[in-house]
Image (cartoon, rainbow, N blue to C red; front, top):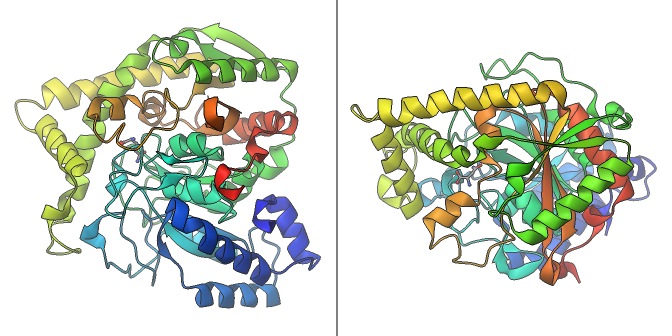
Length: 469
Ligand code: GLN
């Protein structure tokens, strides 16, 4: 199965003609035919003939780009010219974008081959893909459980090796939560690191675009191709893009990792706690120091996020009024409506000061706390989700539990920092467990080297899901 190889190996083999991009792409489509009916990761499969024709062309004119000829999928939150984009909502059921998102364009320019637009919670609202209008994605490790969300589709596809890598969108955990539940690696980038032009907005002060793949190294290859300033996105940063793949091998000896003890309390599943505690020892054996610290504001993350994100989404979704784009508002899901209503309420006069403005003030406090801590540390070691992959209905029927699933992820978006999510073990029934390393602004490179060092001495990330056995 060539889609199981690393990007580095695939790039080498394509050039030595051990196999062609055509072979690799066809292999992905063959696997999709077998596995997709079981997991339902796709909303739209790119026409096989088109993808294979593109692969042939790339085989004939192989470039230097490491992503040339490599198949990828995108969460269905990105505009892709000529290919349907739905945000998993019937409102955009037959919407064909007239232009492409910058991230898609950059990947196309790099020679990568888009094969699918992937399932998600409609408009990014959720943590289990159960709020999609196209049926939930099943976890390739246990088909009775959710693939996570909101980007469960791209994560499940990468986990099942239907695609070499994927692109997600992380507003409050949508890249990292599904990465943890599917046993893959993913980077939630610093706010502004990757252009969001052509990304369907959920909450504009929190939205980020990032890679999902098998390893930290693969994520580094993808981020190198998609990061950077974009004149079409005024929030994209002019900070130069480092050579992430070259910096991967930097020694992690002497790196300082913070371990916030409040994060490892009652709310955390004991299996996840045990796995991360073991990972902590691995970092120590690699020469890093891991120190217990206090970061007491964690519990306020969810309340602040669930004021800010709904407020922003109530404004962003205002444009889907059935006049200019797609079909009418009646097609919003129950979860979408809950958020639009909460957000509108928090922004309305009389409540604005009490809720929205107060949440912004707390946001500033969070930023200060994280900044203070990260002066002395290179990364914070944190769980990704407090719970193991959920059974269907578990989150859908319990809005409070649904929000609490975001406990460890949303706070990172509130402060705008980068976070690498990576596999660190398995629980009962062979369910995957993930952890995240959170760093200071634009420290992706350092997080990648920590993740890469960890993955060189562990093999969690190499395990294949049940659906392939
Ligand atoms: N689960 C979170 C929410 O529902 C995060 C989603 C996201 O990052 N798009 O808001």
